[in-house]
Image (cartoon, rainbow, N blue to C red):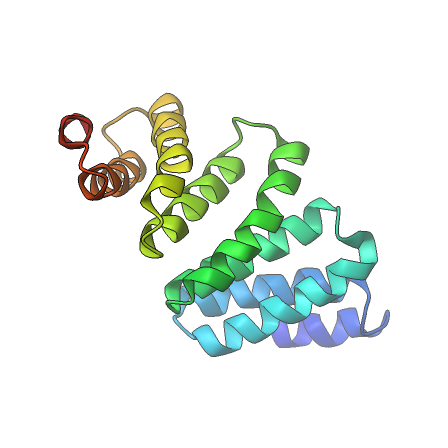
Length: 168
């Protein structure tokens, strides 16, 4: 289905935002299917399109960078993932608001990227914000909160803040 949609979108030009949106959808599907190399390639192409049309200050560009960051995290490419999510986060938060679930998702990825890069002091603020946002939106009895709390506890353990780690 996506291949046909891509062909149809390309009728408007190879750099048309509809092509970028289709590529981003393909990348998300491939990511969920663990076809990470293809997903990364399509996400990068979508970001390239969104850079110029509608522009690198657009929500589309931010969402494309977030999609790319998520794929890179699963590939174990934490520094490029951090770079991508740091481009995405202000655009997503600025467009959708500070309490939107997409904002929370980006904040969580930023914190996890810092954690996996062993940059624990930098990981603590976004992971704390992530855990608080997850608790506020769906409560503490959710997988999303549990993941955020676990990541935050690991950070606190590595910082030697064991009392804080015990809270999570």
